[in-house]
Length: 97
Image (cartoon, rainbow, N blue to C red; front, side):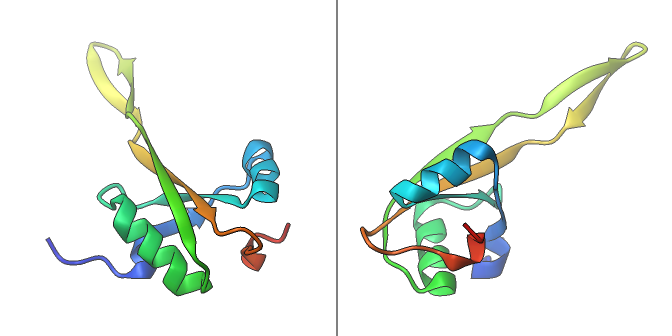
């Protein structure tokens, strides 16, 4: 498997109401590549946004299936989210909050 670069690891920021409220505590939520691990996510965030990462939590969601006649089809693919906690006093301005 080819190594992922920083911009391939972080796919997009997640800006739901709950994740925007968590930015006040220094926690930022990103959708990340399905094969990225905590160390890769921490390194990517610190390189791209020039901040110090304290902790990374990973949340995996399983694919959702439905039925089309007798066939079982995939309606929603598996995703992975990362909640990144920054050092006190640091923030990411790209979130626009």
